[in-house]
Image (cartoon, rainbow, N blue to C red; front, top):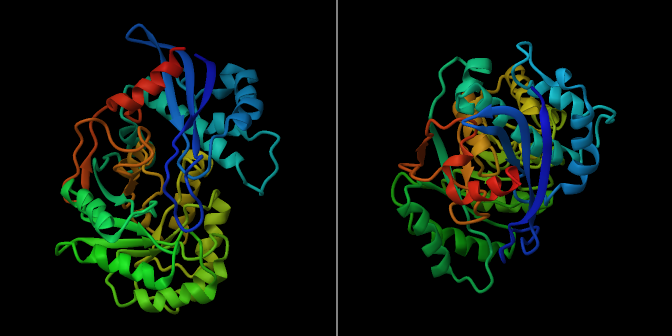
Amino acid sequence: MRIVDIREVTRPISSPIRNAYIDFSKMTLSLVAVVTDVIRDGKPVVGYGFNSNGRYGQGSLIRERFRPRILEAAPDSLLDESGNNLDPHQVWACMMSNEKPGGHGERSVAVGTVDMAIWDAVAKIEGKPLYQLLAERYGNGTPKREVFVYAAGGYYWPGQDLQALKNEMQGYLDRGYKVVKKKIGGGSLADDLKRIEAVLSILPAGCKLAVDANGRFDLKTAVEYAKVLSQYDLFWYEEAGDPLDYALQAELANHYQGPMATGENLFSMQDARNLIRYGGMRADRDWLQFDCALSYGLVEYLRTLDMLKEHGWSPSRCIPHGGHQMSLAIAAGLGLGGNESYPDLFQPFGGFPDGVQVKDSIVTLPELPGIGFEGKADLYAEMKALGEA
């Protein structure tokens, strides 16, 4: 068998929203199709992937560097021992050939996007959901199809008042979420507290709020917020400072005893390891948000999970950023703590297969081959147009 083609198209996921650091008015992503010569139901098996929001499309890198390396490689060099399926680790090594270590930048996103499509194809060729394949290869053999999800929203919208914010959050609660998230750091501390208390005022017992500063604060501001946020029983306080400022994160732990979360902007096992070594993260309460679609894909994520185990961390402390079905599959197959969800944003690339409902912040993954993209009609329409072009 062999890979016949790799196709990329850049798609807009623009929105008038902003967080504390960026707006999304010109946000894009890359959609990738990996076409194989394996035939199922009369058609070639095609694997699909896309990168998470926040890092823009990766078309140039994919088309100029990573696609040619794969297509120019000897087909047998990309196969597993059976010779009947792709080996994602071999494909990953091929993509990263002639790449220097360190300086991860945007290439980690490009590789992660193609890697997602490779895993989708591999699971489809096996005729299994990706979460089942992962549980068999790297887990305990039995996936946990019930996955915790939280609703990410609470961005700064033009003209949005407190009532509109509460209406947004109520919409998530009405759809079955028990944990919701909102942005902080995009205004004054006083204004942020009004927004926090507005959301808290509508949360029923047993529901919680998480807040996310998107790396906006210096140490002084991060600590100032920490002291005030300590009065609330928050689900977590997320990414207070620059993601690579491990000293800030470590010092913040001295001022905030509640759960903290970070990691969505760390794009390699090595950077994740530095966070664990030097960032003061606490394995008994804090959360890690590494996103495989931004950080070289699942091949690298498996290395990150091995590293975490060596440092005494459970995979159940990982709740990936991104809100995509790839991380849902990883969560179910490898026992992660859950996954982010964007109920209303970045569509059609976020969300779940059609018919999947959230109940008490839990979704049950259907038994669809691969990642399960074909179960989401609006998303699969985009993918099919690329894969069958």
